Image (cartoon, one colour):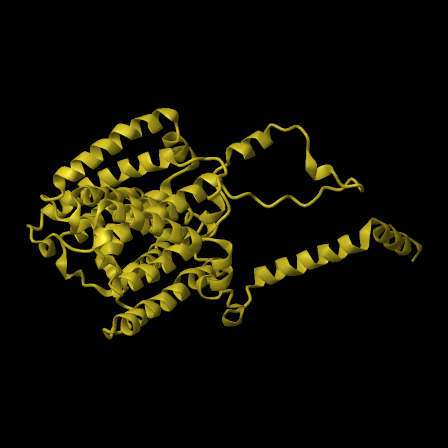
Length: 402
């Protein structure tokens, strides 16, 4: 679900390599430096993205079941308090290099706009033909989970603005607070959600590597245990007393049946709670390479496709089975959702769906002059490398003789 990008935070292994006195770039027989190896992806961020998408899938699976269990509803409230803020914050962190250059705009279109159009069409068609209830296709009204692509597109486009603002996070938080008290914004492009989740993206834009290092300390990991325990206990107490609609950030205070001033207050309170739980979540994310680390590169595939499975199950009435509304059934549904989204992040699924999730679409764009120059330079270097050093010596001798 997050944009593909090389790691910006050195992993523990890369830190060890910095202390190695041996320089492998000089290991060629002709004494010339070898090409610099490609930057490695950071295991921490891939692990965080994978674990976050698992929590998203679990939360979606709990939604039709949570009404029968106060404990499950409490867990749902806690997860929904931080899983999307964590997603959005990391998305903002990896959007820091966006500068509206032709190459970045092209990737914005192919990696966000195209998948949005495809899945914004697929979900209504699924409801029409599987549920039997005709659903209109509207690119202005994000359906189910496609709102995140729409929001990410808007947030990315505004990135240069947030780089210029003197105090970006307070400004973004102020916009979110105003949006929570303004029912007249309308639902086009899910703007209420875009504006109310905006502070997390802007915060991510302003984070640095050392900020993530702070939450990965052992003391923070230990402190996260009582924090999550208290959050679960508080959520259990709040279940019959709080409207869970606040967690979705898609309605104003008036639409939730309370005075307008409650919106900014709740927005500020939820921002603080979400940041605290996000920090605790990130403190538990392993920094080393795990069996699921490689799946972190495919979270966009898992995010977009797991909803098709869950919606199919919902339309077919599978969640109405009595066995799923018992503790063992809820556990089984949780495990099934986690396993399904894991499979949907794997290489075979990514290769099969790359043409709609990450299409190249070279035919649709003009070639950038700088890109063409880089390709010509790369091609010329390849030709020189293929000829070898002896060819260069012969050419120099021929030039001297001439």
